Image 1 (tube, rainbow, N blue to C red):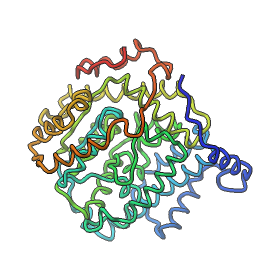
Image 2: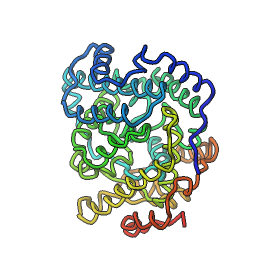
Image 3: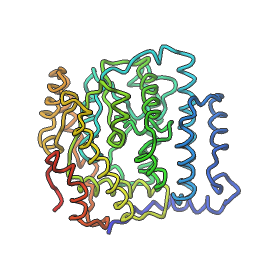
Length: 415
C-alpha cells in the first residue's frame, strides 16, 4: 500500500514546537471567520468584499478545516495564510473594479479552455501553448500575487516572479519529491481553480486538505455561477495592462461545472483531453496523498482513492451527458487522446490550431520543440505508484466509468 511521504526532520521539529505553544497562539485555536476577515481588512485597508456569494463556501470551508482536516500546526498556518490571501484578493479585486470601471468593460472573447481531467497531459499542453505570444496564459506568479495588475513592459521581469518562486521552493523543502509528481514554478501556467479561490467554491481546497464535506458541496451542490463571475473579473484585471489576442486556460474543475462554464463563456473554444480513468485515479490519488502531507499527519491513501474515484467518475460521465444533450457544438470542442499527444505532441498542437483555425507560426513551433527537448516527463525523476496502492477493485472501477470510456473510446492502461 501507498504511504504518505516522510517529512523532513526540520518540519517535524517545527510542528512539535508549535504544538507546545498550544492555545497561546492563534494556531492553537479553530480558524475563525471574524479573525480572518479582520486580518484581510488590516492588511489591505479595505472593507468591501463585494458580493456576499462567497460566504457560503467560505463558512463551509472553515467548518471542514476545523472539524475534518486534522491539521498540524504548520497545516493550520498554511490554511490560515491561504484563506487570508484569498480574502485579500477579493477585497483588492473589488476595489480595482470600482475605481477603474474600464477593467470590467473589457470582454473575455472566445477563450480556449482545456477541461481535461488531471494527469491527462493538460499541464504540458498548457505550457506549450503559453509559448505562443498570441496566447495569454495566467502564470502562477500573477495569480498568487495579482496586485498591482501586471504590466506588459515588465511582465517577464516583475520582481514578484522571484518572490513566488521562493515560496514554491519552500514547498519543495517540505515535500522534497513532489516535483516528481507535478512540476511547479512561478513562471509556469496556473489553473483556474487557483483563480477562483477568492470565491471559495473551488476544487483546489479538496486536493490540499481533507475537507470532504466542503468538497462534496463544491463538486455536487454549489451554484458555480458566482465562481465564473469572479473568474471573469480576475482575468479582466490580469489583461488590463497586459493584453493579448486570446486567453488559454485550463482546469479539471470545469468538468464538474460544465453548464455553468458554458453559460459564463458561451463562445469558449474547448479542449478535452482523455486518458484511462483508472490511471488518472491512481496518479491523482498519489499526488493528493503527497500534497496533503504538507498540512496533516493523518492521511489515508485508501480513503483518498475511494473518495476521488467517485468524484472523477461523476465528472467524466457528466461530460458524456453534456455532449449527448448537445450543449456543446461539435465545432466548439476538440478531443485529444493523451496517448496520441504524448507520442507526437507538436502534431497534436497543430491539430488543435487547425481545428480552431489559428495560425501556428514556425517560430512558435520551434520554441515548443526546444521546450520539449528540455522539459521531459521525468525531468525531476519518475512518479512511482500502483493502482493497488489505493484499495480499489479494477472491475468495479471499470464499470463505474464505463459510460465515459465507451463514449470516447478511451484506451485501457490498467487491466
